[in-house]
Amino acid sequence: MFFNLRSLFDKDTFNEELIMDYILPFTKIKKYHPVGSDISVQEIKKFARNYSYQFLDSCFLFYFCIYKNPQYIVNLGFILMSNSVSHEIAKAMFSTFRKDDYAALIQYEYEWWRKETGNSLSLPFPFYEKIINLNELGVIDYELAGSDIADGSQLPDPNLCPLPKNSESNNNSGETIFNSLKKYCRYMNGEDVNEAGASFRNNHLSTVITAACRLKDRYSVYGFASVLFDSKYFNWADKEFNKDFVMYIANIFNIDSSLVEGNDYNQSKSREKAKQMLSKKEMSYLNVLMK
Image 1 (cartoon, helix red, strand yellow):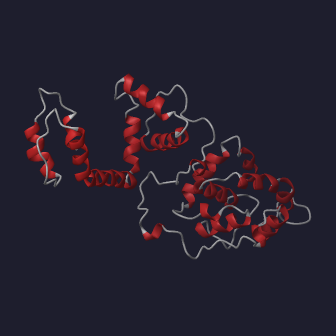
Image 2 (cartoon, rainbow, N blue to C red):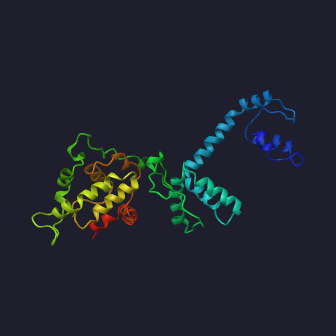
Image 3 (cartoon, one colour):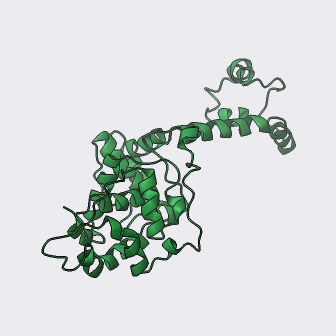
């Protein structure tokens, strides 16, 4: 810490006495000695060994702040790309954020930042132009709006146990899926002839199964479930839109149940995600299901 602080000052402005008398004692470092410009490598290593725990504590503190409040780091990142800073800084930040390693994550955060603040950046092109899949990035879908992950109420509901892998309803064949949905199918005048759900089974089921296979994150699973919940082809008389319903849909379509675990999304937020999904070319064919 001493050497890092000292490197910030040149010889004319460096105040060694200030650091020794005020800053180091504040960090509870009891053992130190004045350092001259001729300090040996051995002395530096010895100093680092003696006070390495201070560096470790600082790392944990910094990590804790980011973990609890990721939105502040996101805000700072995009502020450093705005007109509030020099063109050189903004350009350097943009070129860094577009690196392949995390461009998709930055695009995800940028969409949140725009919605949250109402601001936008003058970008020559997006950070990431493909479909964003947080799971493929190895990143947990965290809540930028702020939620206490350690809160017991946010832990997976123990009553929502996924069905066994060999369960018949986990078979994603079209016939098995339709049989699981059949009792909720609505009779559609002008489409169904002999039985309720015939039009859905014959004309739309295969595309719905394809859409289910593409779901890779929790928010999209809730959006997909919302599409089915609001679909004109179904009447979910005895069900409410909640985590139980989403898990029910996930089991029917053989969607990884772990994607449903964690923080749940309310019906309003899930409908908003459904709208986003239906507005994209890859999912636009599901609009035919809606009322």
